[in-house]
Length: 290
Image (cartoon, rainbow, N blue to C red; front, side):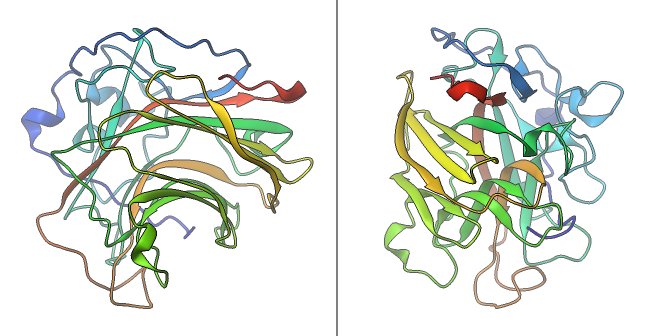
């Protein structure tokens, strides 16, 4: 969305470096298609694993986070029932925001976002037919403030001018608050492709199939451990422009037209979004893991 606008969350040292708690194992769903980028975190991974290229083989340790902060200070590992594609082998990860979630002098945003390590603006994630999988769950101890607009998952064009696809929640700037309690999937022009109420208790599973050859998007969804089902599309969209995926939270301010640099953000911020089952698969031949 914007070039290198980054933020992160500063947690206490004790909680930041604690090993992830064991999760209850759920019956694992099978990934049936070749994985292009795997963002699932193996159970037992230490938080400091994410801080360096020497250890982090999953996400880019440099992006997208705030000044002088490490991912071990940003990510939390809640003890949750495993999401549909995590099973007993992988753990969910919570991306959190605080007052420290500011990159350089970009004071409008609060932001922390995960980026696949090997994703690149003209890489395999931008060609053919690919499906992005992710599951989300709400943390009642770190609720989102849905009077703000949140960008949670998106594919940002290589020139940083737009997002070909964006998974959002909260009250979108300049829009009605009537759907602020919904997750919304939009195209680069803000056109709604699908929306669903936020479930405050259960995992919500999403898969977004991006057909770069036909410029089409198809959306799959389920709750809990239920198999994914197609809920929207294929819909014609503009997927041109290359780019990279980001997964986390970008919280926009209120009360300004300059959302990058100014606006209102509440103090003592303590918010989080739990993710599980993050991966990008190759959907050539109409293959989609359900």
